[in-house]
Image (cartoon, rainbow, N blue to C red; front, side, top):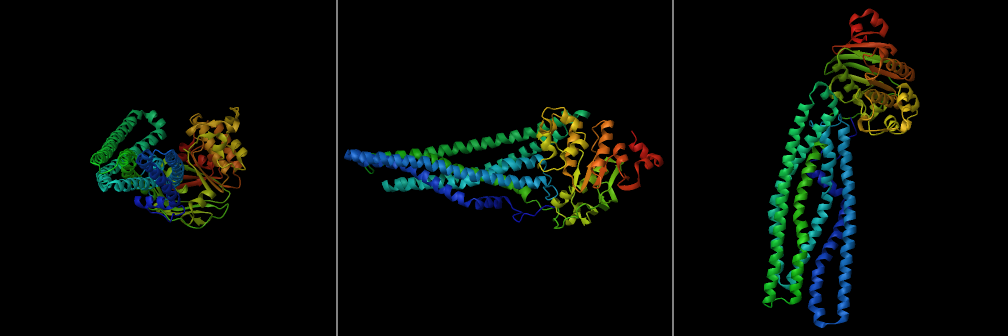
Amino acid sequence: MMTTDTQRPRPGAAILRTALRRNIGAMIAGTVLMGLYQAAETAFPIALGLIVEHTMQDRSLGSLGVSIGSLAVIITTVSLSWRFGMRVLQKANTTEAHRWRVQVAACGLQPVARDVDGLKSGEILTIATEDADQTADIIEVVPLLVSSLVAVVVAAVALSLADIRLGLLVIVGTVGILSILAVMSKRIGSSTQEQQAKVARAGAKVADLIIGLRPLHGFGGNHAAFGSYRRVSTDAKRQAITVARVNGAYAGTALALNAVLAAAVSLTAGWLAFGGQISIGELVMAVGLAQFIMEPLKMFSEMPKYVMIARASAERMALVLSAPPVTVPGPERPAPGGDLEVDGVRHGTLRGLKFTVAAGEFVAIAPYQPRAAADLVAVLAVNAAPPAYEGVVRLGGQELADLSVEAVREHMLVNPYDAEIFGGTLRTNIDPSGSSRTLPEAVEASMLADVVALHRDGLDYAVRDRGANLSGGQRQRLSLARALAADTDVLVLHNPTTAVDAVTEQLIARNIAKLRRGRTTLVITSSPALLDAADRVLVLDEGVITAEDTHRNLLAGDEEYCLAVAR
């Protein structure tokens, strides 16, 4: 349920075409400058040959001065054209990689919008970083390919003017080298694509291990989990070695073929000069070109490899960007301060769940089965799109299917029990946008003021990634403070106090009820303190609401409820 992208779906080839089209201006400028660089570099041995041919024969100081000036112009052209050409191309490359990272990340951060075919977050992260960078390399590859071709053509023409056989040798040799390397580059493309997939799976396994590390330690499953990661990582390592071998064979073959061509040109030129068919100046030019042409030939021969790598990366990005939408977003917006209605929802363990939270009401749901609570949170957070479940959820009188994700999350915040804590400070975690008007009240209500008071920097105390330098209770209170500071029309909290002590939990429950007075609030919890603070309690058992009353009335009249929530 996010804004549709008219450029999707796109296969890998279309992604490359899009990248080339968006950077056509920079590529033209880069091609001109890099072509000028290659032409000037190739002109250097030609100029040396002309100097030997004319200046040394005439032995004129004026001719020598003109020759030195010409060489200075060529060297200056080589230096400046390379500098500014690469600056233009690398800027376009970096900008294009950023664009693709943003698009892939948008799909990864909006799981309801795209069915990413089972890709895990770690795999999407790899695609959004390494694959995005390698895809954007196509912007440099094309201009460098064209400029290398310019150098080869200039060299072939110059050698043809000396002797047609030298020019034909360069042309035929270049075509032969590229034909051999084109076949080898296909192996590189397929091997690289397989390596990227295995590295991405290893990254996903790491992400899973980090998330579940504490539970794994708790029941002693960490050794088995690490063994599983070791196997995945070993597969990735073996494939990386295979790719390195293929790349090494490719680079070695390219270097050997280029050296053979350069040697062939030099030897042929020497034979022609020995027979008097070319002059000494032309021999100097031919030998110089044979040496200089190795660089553009090397660059020219490497380009097919980079094209195949870019194509393989683009195909992996297409897995995410071309994934079909789970649902089509609606254009409507909910009424401000509206109620929340769940009508006949069937999803996972929910079996026709039905209840209403009126505008401004504080309602608690006591789930007897934790899975049912998780299924309800998934529906309300739009992590399960409307097509994924039966029934209707209405927010402010509008069905979720008719609302965009942005509109839903602007009016309703669903704070999960395992909300992420980000690297930064306490303040940036509570108010990432810096626009909250209720930050002090949220800090007080969540009992985070105790944590703030512990540190000299207060709210500017540095927080490590995932809150590694905070206790479980501190992380939970920080997450709760962030939810309260958002001050949304509808707030849904899932087990917000499971990691705090009973006294703190009692204070938090009262504070939430006070701070959220007049705002719609739904708390899914088994905490007696929160249940007692609510206007009414709904009992969720076997996927349906089985009882409804105040917490104290339910305690007095429902033995099963008493056993489930009493501590």
